Image (cartoon, rainbow, N blue to C red; front, top):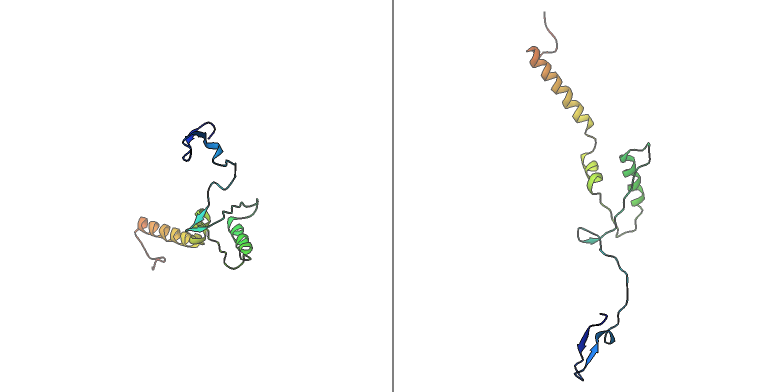
Length: 117
């Protein structure tokens, strides 16, 4: 509002608008982060070499368990997917073994494990 002029109502004269308002520089957050419509704080972390992401999530959960009442935490993105899938390696390995068995059985046209004489 450097050199703009407006008519002042009472006297009908031109005056600088800077005389009618106070201009000051202030700083504030540019955005208020929210999660599920609640004010939120984003925490990001990384693992040290030699540690798994599961160990890092466990360590973060220990730290976050000490939050005061009224505060909570939820996992998002990759950590949420890792927590929700759990340990699927056993299921994947079992399905792979069954698939290989059925493939070999179809190849040799026999499902029985042992041949009787």
